[in-house]
Amino acid sequence: MIGNIVTALAGIILFLFLFWRRLKEDYPSSQIFTTAFYVLVGILVGYGVSLKVSRESWFWIELVGIILGLGVGILRYKFRFFEVLEALTLGLLPWLGLFFLRDSIKSSSLASFLSFFAVTCLITFFAFLDSHYKNFSWYRSGRIGFSGLTTLGTLFLLRAAFASLFPFVISFVKYEAILSGAAAFVFFLATFNLARSTR
Image (cartoon, rainbow, N blue to C red; front, side, top):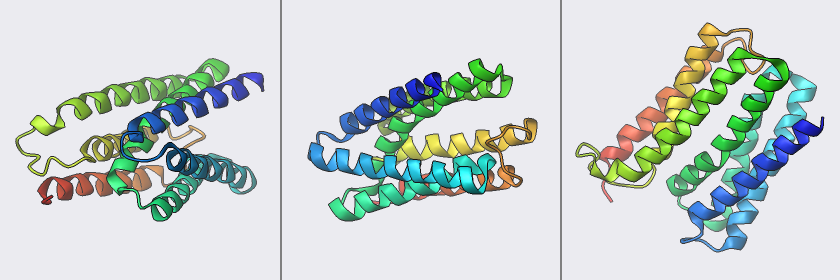
């Protein structure tokens, strides 16, 4: 129990800091932290619902809460969607990694450790893309959003692959591979459209 609380607190602190740091140059801190609060409430509500409805569906139910919380912040403060999505991606990935690391230690779970390793690679991948995407000749628009969309697409693509290899993992629902594959397709399609769009 104590380990879960410590992991959650560390994840929340990391999320708040990284989310604020990513957006602080463009938006007031009060708006950034309020939006982060909406996201945290969405996660908490989603977690509570998953305990009542379906424990193995926690990832997807909490994802709905995250989307709703982020949507409220965007609508209220007129944030630019892709900019905030990147900040959200950067802020939540370390928290997700800590969760899998904690579970791998607590349950001696190989699947959770591989998930932790995958999330760590995704964070590195995001940092690489964020530093170099403007140099990609095929990414003509140069618009913010490429790093976040591509990383999220890769995340769901990996979830689809993991679901095929480790169908017994508690975070995977019955149609996990299909759902994750569809989500990956949407994010990669959004990346393609963003690349072709004009400023």
